[in-house]
Amino acid sequence: MAKRVFLVHGWGGGPDNDWFNWLKKELEARGFEVHAPAMPDPENPVITTWVSTLEKDVGKADKDTYFIGHSIGCQTTIRYLEKLNVKVGGALFIAGWFYLKNLESAEEESIAESWVSERIDLQKVKKNINKSVVLISTDDPYDALEENAKVFREELGSKVIIQKNAGHFDAPIEPYTSIVMKEFLKITK
Image (cartoon, rainbow, N blue to C red; front, side, top):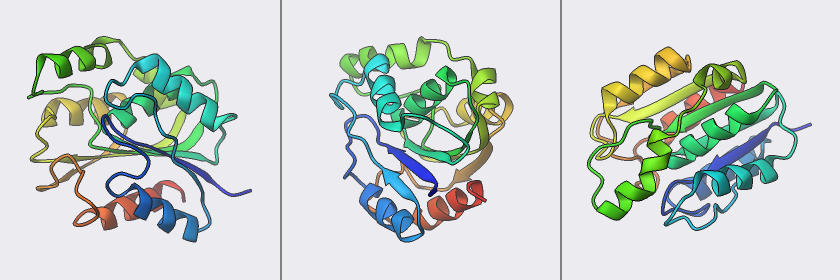
């Protein structure tokens, strides 16, 4: 049975945005079964609908189930993992966050409020995930770099990689796709 990978896009994004198509093709070429669900109302992400969409798409999770999330897709994945009672293979969190800074409008702050304030049982998430890595950029316009790195490292037990000048990891493909692929493949071994 092939290892399954779920690509969870970010706020305002979709399964065809940025580097997702490239990643999907590369992973499929390596024998992975790849799913990239379109999250509902991506301009106004809501925790319950995004998590339930992922839950329906995944079906039965197991040790051969992996996740790659981007931005709020990381939060969606983490909140999904919190609901499980089984250990999955692993996750790569790209531009993952628990804290946000520099949102551009009151509307964005309102949308983000529940994602930032609704508590997550990170010990349960940690118990449900075999390996995890987070990529955070030195110049991400929204991330609180040190605060987020600390939560991923200390509470989730994630390997934290701080990438220089990758912004919010939302450029089309390069310069960071090679590190995305390299770190993901390490998780699956």
